[in-house]
Length: 88
Image 1 (spheres, rainbow, N blue to C red):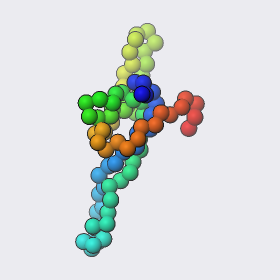
Image 2: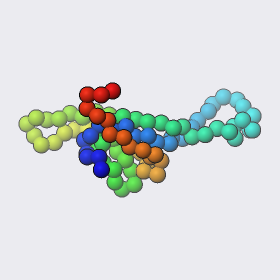
Image 3: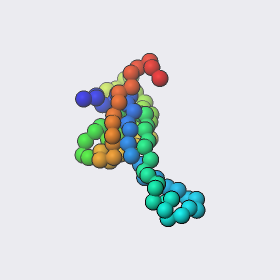
Image 4: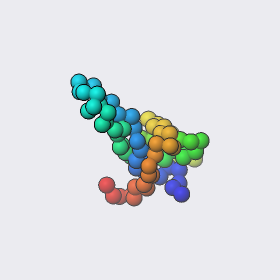
């Protein structure tokens, strides 16, 4: 289990959108997008994965503030990978 606050990469399936003109046959071949986002794990519960793209840690208090939260339905998540500190 990955701990809250860990840097993670979440792989998930997102809705696709195409705004060009194409035949119905070609449109029928389109697929959802495979996507990934990197952030700090807020939690993985209640049927969703929440990650924060930023955090502010207060050294004088026992909390951190999360910013720019992405909420992904668990049913669309294909993998969560912990990012190691100091590596790209």
